[in-house]
Image 1 (spheres, rainbow, N blue to C red):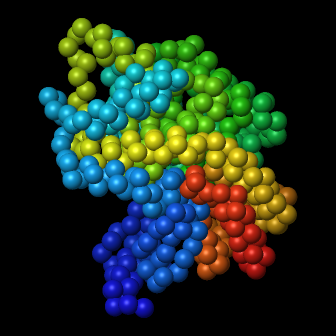
Image 2 (cartoon, rainbow, N blue to C red):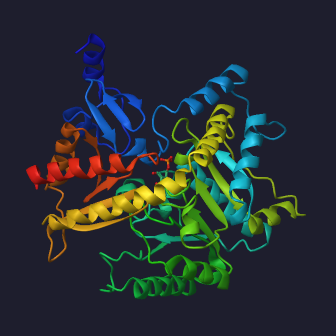
Image 3 (cartoon, rainbow, N blue to C red):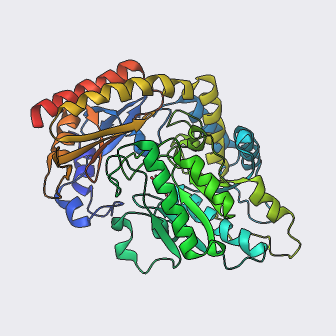
Length: 452
Ligand SMILES: Cc1ncc(COP(=O)(O)O)c(C=O)c1O
């Protein structure tokens, strides 16, 4: 190993306080340092090569060495590395991106986009726009948010408040007041003992409506959810759920926010997750795949209904007191513009449909292992949920290190996977081929055969 590799390994977690990690653990069990990427493959600092079945973090959708995106970034760096877009300013790449993104979301009736730096920002922006939307209409009582248990919406105070997992909430309480959580339509584990997806979709919609009535419909600003829950363990809702949610939101005049940070830009087999369910949201949170992970970028897409209220405001309160220094960063915008072109030229969404169907089919093979309770997914987002006792669906205990041993074994065999709670999460780049999928599945089988 080189002196440089020694230096990096030595300093790995010494000064770098890593996200979602206890610094005590990071120092004891240092993470692998990834130092190089090419296509779907990554190399750690020691030169060990693995297939990146995490895609960076649901983000490197076009792989790690796309020359077209690289060239677009370099060209923009040589032209204008940065200029802000605060009131009275803008830059041409941000304008271009707003045109292209709005065009891409024409079928969803998107009228405008607000740029930011990532998913948490996009959620924060959506929540704030939702509150302002109501204030502009003199319905200032509409301040509350409803979201789903198990949902993940990033780490800002707004996102943490609507998050449905205690791990991201407890240490930061008290959170935003007026945030309430309802049951997720999660077939494998639901509170109603239902095993018919359509019944479950209906039941969960009823629970949402009951919560709205209980709170007082005219106090609710918005309902926010992921079209397919990602970090919560790839929970795919029944097909009737989102259409029912849209109906309920319309019935009570509540805004619908789709957090598409993972599902946006093709991961679930449609360009946007809401399209899976033939639903139009009012606000969409976008990040990750928007720039294929090449540079930090996020956006909140605004539907016509919301946009019109701001555009037609006569009270003088329509200016948004919100935005970031790097909103509409020209280099990130250049990366996104090229990402859209590559996606169209290479029919990436079509690839996800074909390859994703093969992936989901093959992963069913893992049901044969006693430790695998559930296999679920859609497109190129999949989770294997591990259990202590399959018949009783006993959740894997925190002290059971089976999942981390499996992930380690896979890594040593040349496959990087992600563990989250009791789930092994697989989200390969969207350029993955059938051969890549077979490689992932076969490598995992070898790891399960040895460890499980
Ligand atoms: C659905 C969803 N929303 C928001 C976020 C937060 O995004 P970021 O980590 O870019 O702030 C994530 C991150 O994984 C996410 O999955």
